[in-house]
Image 1 (tube, one colour):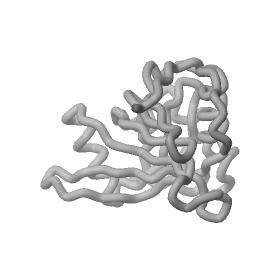
Image 2 (tube, one colour; image 1 turned 135 degrees about the vertical axis):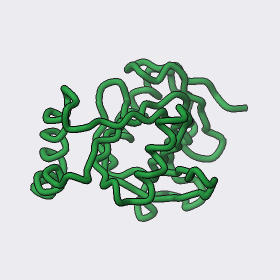
Image 3 (cartoon, one colour; image 1 turned 180 degrees about the vertical axis):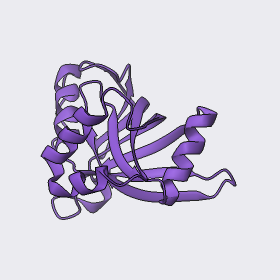
Length: 171
């Protein structure tokens, strides 16, 4: 990436495009016993930049997400440029968010629509997983974020729930 000056609108568009190109996110959560856990999950993203994951209750990160929802605390997600396509391994493009957690049961009004969107993106595996009783949809709503384009190009993200969120340079 060049270091040319970009407008806030261009940055917002670039961030949305970068996010839409990803299929998985890295999830950082913490157990009730304060044990950290890094994991990953396939996701879809809606217009308000919320991430939707279909996860088994048997997975360690699911227990952590349940805890975060109850405590109304935050979890962190990271989307990062693939190593193979990065110009410099030390300056991979990356997008991170601190997110609130909301867990959807099968009774949620948007359950089926979200399952359909997941299936459209990821195929038949979603159909199988969605019928397993231990799977729930986890909605992660970004509160704050950071986007790094490369060396000396780091930005804080605010008002994330819309297309034209605000961006400020980290100094």
